[in-house]
Amino acid sequence: MIVTVTMNPAIDKTIELDRMVQGGLNRIRRAILDVGGKGINVSKTIRELGGTSVASGFTGGSAGNLIEQTLKRLGIHTDFVQVEGETRTNTKVVENDGTLTELNEKGPEITEVKIRELLEKLEHYAGKETLFVLAGSIPSGVPTDIYGQITRMAHEKGAKVQVDADGELLKAALDAEPDMIKPNQSELAQYLGMDEQESERKLTEGAKKLLKEKNIDLAAISMGKEGAIFLGADFYVRCPGLSVKAQSAVGAGDAMAASMAFAWEEKMERDEMIRTCMAASAGAVMTSGTRPPSRETVEELKKMVVQKTEILGKDWQNYEAILFDMDGTLIDSMWMWTEIDREYLGGFGLELPDDLQKAIEGMSFSETAEYIKERFQIPDTTEEMKACWNAMACDKYRHQVPYKKGARQFLEECKKRGIRLGVSTSNSRELVSNAAKALDFEEYFSCILTACEVKKGKPAPDVYLETASRLGVAPEKCLVFEDVAAGIKAGKAAGMKVCAVEDPYSAWDRNEKRRLADYYIEDFTELL
Image (cartoon, helix red, strand yellow):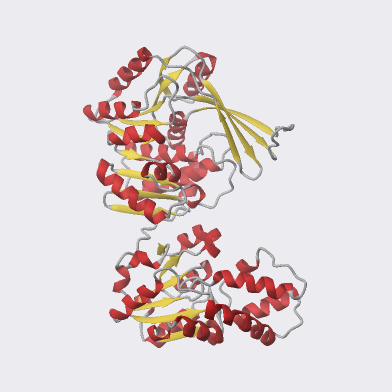
């Protein structure tokens, strides 16, 4: 049995408009009314998935009556405590570009008598086959340790508890050691005392420590369009976000929380649970307002879910050869190519288009010259263009380009272990030689090869296959490090394992990189 607890339910009014003008007239394109509150949204999603639940909490006034009547019409069993005052109405303003502004009312004041009544009601449901889902904010009068109180009561009766909350509510609940949690990235960072922009690796390390300290069985950390992380005592799975047409981000986290509870009730295998969580969350983004996705939509989206263990750890030591892309992977140089392209095109009175870097991604140096010459009708020959780029880049390689963080130390470790190393780059031979001399990395590599020399750029696998051949190592015994999707595709097409490397100049494509690669690192220090 699943019992969802919504202390502060609401009528959710979602307003859609082109752009909100503060202090001016705004014309509403569409308005949608839903019954909601996080726990109620969980119950609605569980129903769509084919499960059942009891929706409990506090309701009051005509808005409260509307919530209960609507849930009953949906076939959801309700058992709320009636209180004085009016259940709140929350207004969500969604603009064309996806910007969400939320205006949430406070809700009614709850007396100690009503709190005791709810606790007694919940205790009646507690048992070994019960999971309580405690989700969302609390109204005035309810103590911030209420989720902790319910968690302890549930555990005394043998029941399980899942929590989706933030701030003091989350802290109090964690002190009582719930069984499952579903924080988002921001909520978890706040609890751990980290900055919201902290690296994913450090956030994950903090979450692992939290699970161990609080005896938590499962954590699902939602990260919006970046996807989600699923953690347990003995597993880590990272799922890139699904590429779907978004209507509204409202309710995506609730759909994931509902899927966790539904999976528990159905005793799903872990992989199926994760697929359901990711699919339901993405499906919720495709709906308007706080409406849950249909079961058919969830089943279809499950096919798109990619699960990655992603942690390379010390496994790199098991490969006979490691092959590196150069720019953006081994050395921090992608920034300079944007500058060079802008300066070069500017010499012809042309502006740098936003899509150029994506268009030439993975191309060999010669292919790039041919593409730019044709697209922009450059009067120079391709040889003249390449010579100009070489001259512009050489000085930057000598004086401004550093190794990626931890890369030099990683090369040293590989050398000590006798792992054969190669560079497989889309750059020109002249620039590779300049970079190798400037950063003194030639000594580490038995083979340095350019895509021009195999006459095919990435995503064709040729440059990686030829590098492996010259090293005398079979492709399946090679590990590739790459920073762009085209390069990852090239390594995979060569039959090699690929570790994607974080780089700010391909951050926009991070989800695709994660989807394609076998592993992902933010920098090489993770491997030392």
